[in-house]
Image (cartoon, rainbow, N blue to C red; front, side):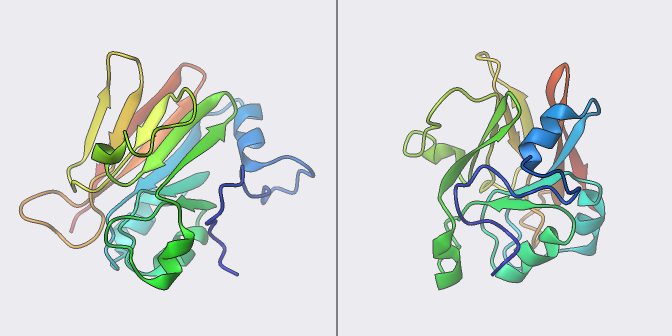
Length: 186
């Protein structure tokens, strides 16, 4: 059984051993800022620089076009992983992954999908504060007029055109979610 989750369950049990408390519960209970690693479009390539940038994350979200299930296993060695299927994830192993999912971290809700253009086809079932999507390979952080933070971590896989190779970090704190792009030295 893989260490990453393909189901829509709320969250894995904490590695800290708090009985009956999911990872989301711990994030909400801790006074410090939670660090959520965001990665997308690996296309079968997981760079050492991406792993280094994601170390220290409390959770990792992969926004699709994974390319190889071993990438999810390597990420799960750092932190619990939630992933969605991208348009290039067509192998049988990837069929277990949803096209979109909603994740709760205390009172904060994140909607994870591969392509923001499919948001109408895969809308969040309720209000969200953060939307994470990949597909374009263009890193971007934007807070829209409705207050929702949109994050595209860019592509951490093979370089495409002159676009940067990157991941993102989502910070969940008392003042609300913020994000930063981490360009990798590839």
